[in-house]
Length: 280
Image (tube, rainbow, N blue to C red; front, side):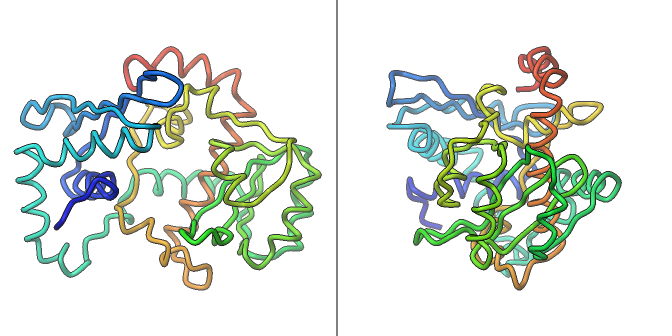
């Protein structure tokens, strides 16, 4: 495996999934453009081989994270794990996929099955979202600047998933009549090519932490959710005509969590402040 700076984050994510490691990532602003990224890997209750926190600086959060990830995966402890991963026949044959046991998907499926009605690609069901506020998320981003494969829209009891490439004109018009809640608005609005000022970005309310980490506030014991394996996010796996159940539930729960974190913000923001020094 030839590890370059631009794919170091992906490599680190794959080894974390393979070896059941949890990433702790923190950013410090150096000035308005440069950030310092700190990455520490944890194996459940203790640090792997007492690995130090790997720190590097880059232009923007993405670059600083790539630099720090590259330092991390070149460490002796992680290099050994990478060699083991590459020699694993299941991984080499691309049989390694633990999305069926991913705790975020399992939890999300339970929430949706118990509390929500989930509808897929019936544009007439937009009328079910009759409240003035909806949450929006999207998946399946193309590196060529095309529309994302999927958009998810949720309120308190309904979550809709659509082929955005097919229905983008109708959905854009619908969303322009709503106040939309986003977690990381800049990215989604750009990808969806959605021109509206009637939106609320709730990520800053939660100190710009990842949605997976903040989703733990919705659980009774502040679970630490992990992402599915790296191959789960491959663009081809978001082909709308060939979606599996895991991708459907993963996409749906992202929108549901976004809605809940906004509607119940007066409950979750104080809870977040109380636990962030322990969990985040």
